[in-house]
Image 1: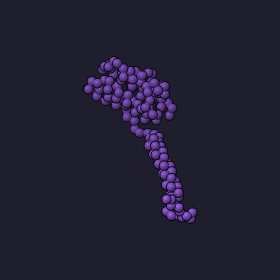
Image 2 (image 1 turned 45 degrees about the horizontal axis):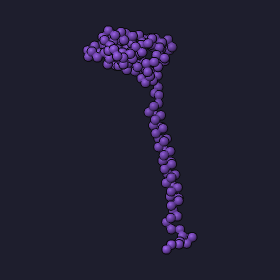
Image 3 (image 1 turned 180 degrees about the vertical axis):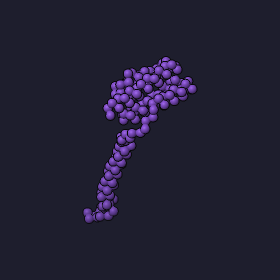
Image 4 (image 1 turned 90 degrees about the vertical axis):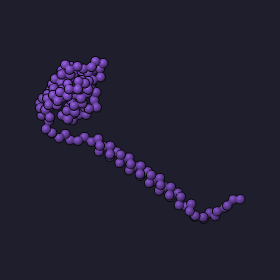
Length: 157
């Protein structure tokens, strides 16, 4: 038996289409808000901060300190990793470039260092373990790289 409703019946079913439309519209604007929020958050967290001139630490101080620490514990491969990290941080501060994420070849391309970073990479990841003398030579070359970069900046300033 079929229940026939008159054509003019306007019970609770008449609010369903406007309610669905409101829910879909609300979901659309909510999604749009979330996209805008995450985009703004992304750009805020990845913004370039202006380079503030800080009192530079003398490169010989931290290089000498690194050399002494590495000689104490005797792990010269770890010393090479520390040297790479500290030198990249120093050059990143002085140039404003994102050097930390660059490979040795990219650094050599952008900041000519006479093959220093390629040699350092060889000692970090190569099959031969660096010894005291090779690490001392790396420290000396690192001093020259930092000094050359400072001289280049002073020349351009």
